[in-house]
View 1 (spheres, rainbow, N blue to C red):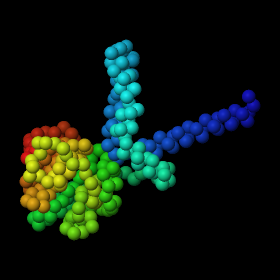
View 2 (tube, helix red, strand yellow):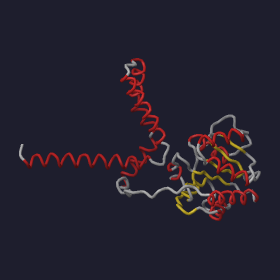
View 3 (cartoon, one colour):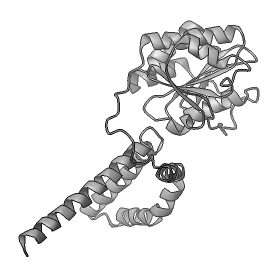
Amino acid sequence: MSLWENIGKYLNDVVDIALVSIVIYNLILLVRGTRAVQLLKGIMVIVAVWLLSSLFKLDTLQWLMSQAFNLGVFAILIIFQPELRRALEHLGSGKLFTQTLFQPDDEGITIQTIESIVKASDYLAKRRIGALMAIERTTGLNEYVETGTRLDAKLSAELLINIFIPNTPLHDGAVILSGNRVLAAACYLPLSENPDISKELGTRHRAGIGLSEVSDALVVIVSEETGQISLSLGGNLIRGISPSDLQTMIQNTLKPEKEQKLFWKRKGDDRG
């Protein structure tokens, strides 16, 4: 084999690896900030179990994992349907490979931000103006951000209040918050189908509980009928919270998971 043939072969390998890397990188960007990240972790666990069962000759477990892989292609098509649709939409619009290589670091939520959320909630509650605010944590909420109007604005109490004032373009729907920014407004959230939820709770509360069931988001809900402030996390709902308790609960929820569980256990949950 001549020198030029060797160079051509190596060049082809480099181009091949580069293209595959770009595709994988863009796919990671596509699922980042969505529930698909959690699903991918679950798939990785299944793969790890299969490798261990093969290593230690656990025939029955290996057979079960093999059956799971056989059905995995169809399961992936069903589970990742929203992400696959987004990928095709980005590909068709030419956006899939135009994302920036480096993303800015996410800002952590600050005490000032929490105070702004509490101030806005208190203002809206006193005037019985309905509100729904979802605070993003580790599970990304991009798929819900895309259902609303993207703002990407610095969070402030005044901005939140203006968004929820009745008869304004963005008042209907949820606001999604991440760190110290308002990502989007007028977003649609999944409704909870839990039959134990009190019948007196309307769509706003069901949407807040629904999002907390499918993600680890913390959802603040202000009732238009009663003016009560509620907080939802992990499918649980605490109603009738004072502004001072709201601030304490948000701060405690954003602490490490162990402290968070102890705090919510102490407070108890209320589904009705």
